[in-house]
Length: 254
Image (cartoon, rainbow, N blue to C red; front, side, top):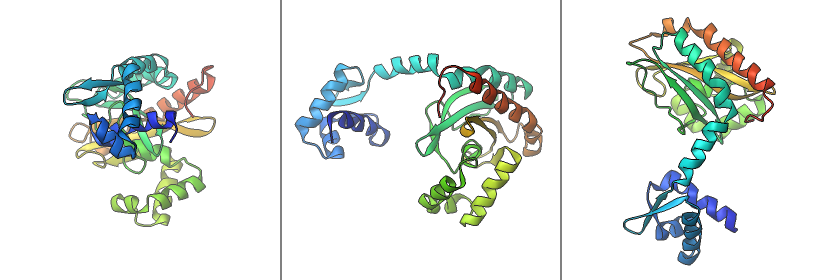
């Protein structure tokens, strides 16, 4: 493992290793010598990506806060989508939460949200939270528009997980995805969180589904039948974001 890869691997340990890591735990996790792990940690501390804490531990440092601010100021997808999301929230009477998600690795990650008046729907999604591609309306609205060969590969690589939460065969899974593709949206009820209904439509760039916009409501506030009445509004919002992204001169995520 070369230097840059090692630095990235140290940071990625925080995804599974907890909020505080020590040099020893990093060395064990990456199968490095203690001295090599320490050199990587020292470089990250110097750059502000790690912060030393009591007990010889290290947490993620303030550099991430700074870069998150820079990202919020420059992320074209979020900047373009925000006014559209606010308009959609007004259409539904601010009785839910509008969520913007994009593909990230093999997941769908929330990058922006706009909340309505209380009691708005508390969502499992918040900025930075990644969900499996196979659970929830936000994920399925993007997943359904993958090319068939990628959809089949994703199913085969995650068959046990998919069968545990939904369709039991490839044919049933493919039929579910084709139906979402046909109608242009996905709807789920209590799939991510109990009592939450999600309605999502894909956002495209160059013909590829790169993101999704979702309306999340509490079932006691808006039932499934009532939320489905907002399908045309949701799809128009997704189409408007798609159009604005296609006209944008600055690169948006692929």
